[in-house]
Amino acid sequence: MTELEPIPAARTAKAYLLFAHEPYYTGPGAREINTTVVAANSLLHPQVQQPDGIRIHDRLTQGRKQREIVPLATLTHELNGGADWPAVGDWEVVTADLLQLVRFGHCDALSACS
Image (cartoon, rainbow, N blue to C red):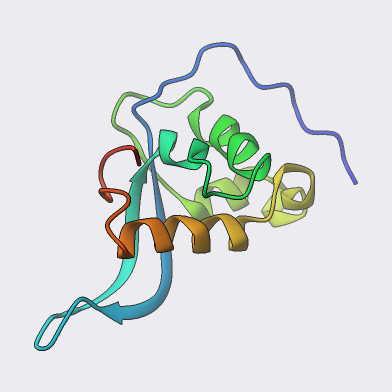
């Protein structure tokens, strides 16, 4: 496993994570939802697997612009094409946790979970 670069001190809390997932429907006649955007701070929610959520949050927010939307694929690219994900966290579990928070109303998809 390769050692990751240290995370710069300058971060923005206003970054967002965009990720795709299996489609779901919010009700009869509703359109399918297969992508979700959450505020970076949602990764810090206690119902998100930790410390994975914290480490992904750190990678997501380093050196980003305010209100930047960062696709999960971008993080994968930055993490040596995904080879360094094990050193950061289990993105599959974390995104599944985030999706559950959003789907069941514990998290507004565009603001931090409470």
